[in-house]
Amino acid sequence: MPRLLAEVVQRRPWGWRRGTVTSVGTDGWILLECEDGLADGARGRRRTAVHAWHHLDLSDRLLPGTAVRVHQRASRHPDAPIGVGPAALAGPPGVLPGLVSLHVAQGPPPVPDPVQLEQWADLAGAVVIDLRTRELLSGRL
Image 1 (cartoon, one colour):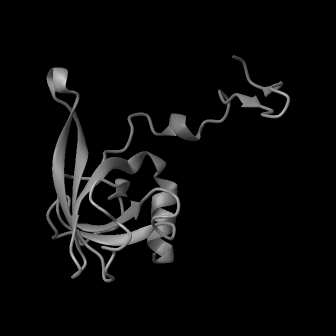
Image 2 (cartoon, rainbow, N blue to C red; image 1 turned 180 degrees about the vertical axis):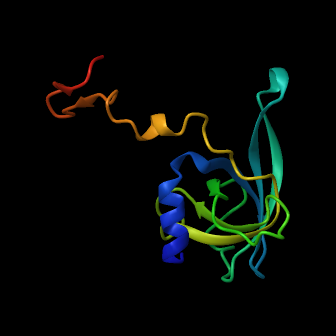
Image 3 (tube, rainbow, N blue to C red; image 1 turned 60 degrees about the vertical axis):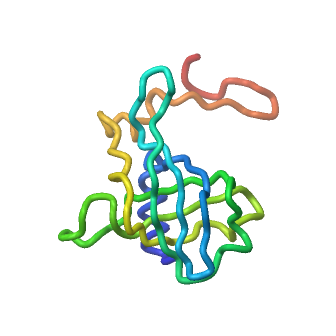
């Protein structure tokens, strides 16, 4: 994965979308079924297809049914349609060698930024707990 794309993904941790691999071709094309982030009544979240391409054959690693996550908040060409452009793909440990860069050819728009983004960076309300002793180090529960 290019360093710049990895940095963009790290700066936007809220941009991940859960998905499932539907098919993987030896030519690099991958079809995913992902949550589009919108509720669909009693059925839960709506699912939508994401068509993406990777320059290497991942068919031996990504099998149909594999749970993955897609992050589409990378820079894209201003004339490109919404939902098209560079993306990051993450799979279960041992399936992929870390993050893998993709080009999304068709899919939903990226996950929107959270409302009141400055609250994400405000550490005044953070709670810090020592995981070994379970002692409260700062903040209030």
